[in-house]
Structures are given as C-alpha cells and as structure tokens.
Length: 153
Image 1 (cartoon, helix red, strand yellow):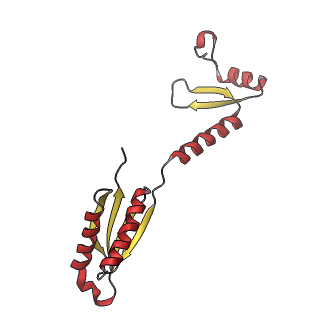
Image 2 (cartoon, one colour; image 1 turned 60 degrees about the vertical axis):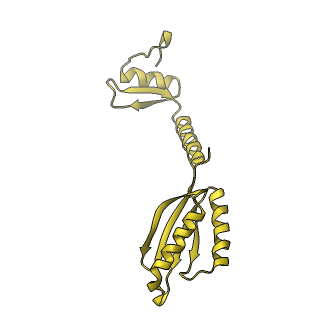
Image 3 (cartoon, helix red, strand yellow; image 1 turned 180 degrees about the horizontal axis):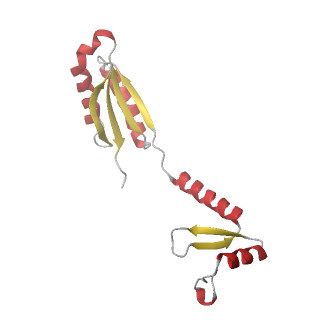
C-alpha cells in the first residue's frame, strides 16, 4: 500500500490480506525475491487482462521474417534468369528475404560450378538492394544462397 507522500507502507501479511478483503481486491506478490517481498492490492483478473494486452501489443509490433524461394536449374537460360531476377528484386523491395537455390537432378550434380556461378551472378545483380546472408553452399542435391534486403534509411 502507498501511504501519504507516495511512499510505500510496510505492513504484515495478515494486515495486507485484511485490507485486500475489505476492498474486495486481491493481494498480489509483485517481486518475491525482494526483502521484504513486494505486494500490491489490485484486481487480479484485470491485472492478468492488462498483461495479456501488453504481450499482444508487443507481438503485433514484432516484424515477421518472410522468406521467398527462387528455384534454378544448373543450365538455366538467360531469359529465365532475368525473369527470376525481376521477382527477386520485387521480393527484396517488399522486405522479404530471398532463398535462391539451384536444384541438381540425377547426373547434373557434376555441374556444381555452373550452379555456384549462377547464384553468384544473382548476388551480384542484387547487390544494390540486397546483402548476401549466406554464400552458396551445397546441401544434398541443392546449392543454397540466402539474400536479405538492405536496411532502408
């Protein structure tokens, strides 16, 4: 309880419970590790409601990371590359990350160097609006690279 002048009153547990019952409120322990423990006389249901409301507000303000995927083959043609490059630019402009990967089928795994060159060419084309987060690396039959959008000033 807060006394006159805004300073907290130190009362026993029995007195605090008696005061809370008289006011039809709850005695809530705020910080149990303090010496003496800090308690407040409040409406507990309202307290829980306010806590949930704060958590929801924090969650709604958090930015969600969106990852868009672009799939290439090791022998992707120039027109297809330009088409996917245009999509990658729009994804990065929207604030999404781009996960570009070259998928190797069957014996095409022998063209690993072509896949890496393709991904590095993509990274070079997007360097003005994106930053390479992970360099091209082989993961099974896929060579993966992730590009994140640059921070806007």
